Length: 296
Image 1 (cartoon, rainbow, N blue to C red):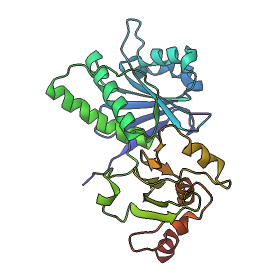
Image 2 (image 1 turned 135 degrees about the vertical axis):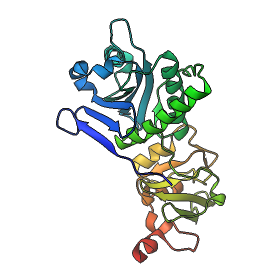
Image 3 (image 1 turned 90 degrees about the vertical axis):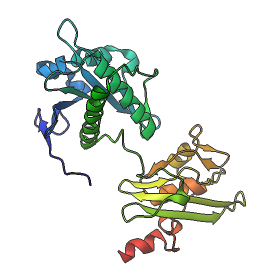
Image 4 (image 1 turned 120 degrees about the vertical axis):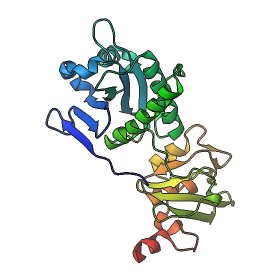
């Protein structure tokens, strides 16, 4: 059973959109969320002069997809660690996309080159595996060589980091669904309702069968679902662009779990046109999502 956690968020500038200091009870780690435009104000934060790891966050102007870059910063001879590295990124024209940074270090300055290399590697792979963000790291970070004891310690730091960064609003490490196994093996639960879509397409004359999970974020269309490959003229523009994303749909089969904010958008993506998602999605008993919600 997951235990409750106490997180303390300190609004350094007194406003939610400003700089935020984040600590967790019984954890030596410490995190700072810093808007890019407020970076110069962070010079007085001594913890940011230490070694650590950091995340640069933004959203694509073209696709509205979330973007993250994950890096490490060692303590340099001039006494500037994480903050100096963030300032370098701010001056770099190739990294002008980010709008917010989240930096992690420790209250006892315990990280050396080996530790931050390990953390950067693990965080990058976790972010790629979750498939929620476009990970801008072009190279595979060096894992480094750590002892079994140190690895256990760093994995605990990673677990706490997941909690903190999620609490700050970034679900960069969270899988879209709890169970990522094929849909036919997924047992429906009260938290994540398993739904089905089945309809014969008037355009391709094919039977379109898809499955999805209702989560706290919306509807996750599951990998392996059948997708109508022909667009209707009534298809929403946002959905049309999503359907054109490279390698998302191959030969009418969805290649990865995909999150939608509403059941109607998920159904429109499947059928390639306008449709009422609350009527189209049904549970294993044939009840529509609309009927399920009315009965609750």
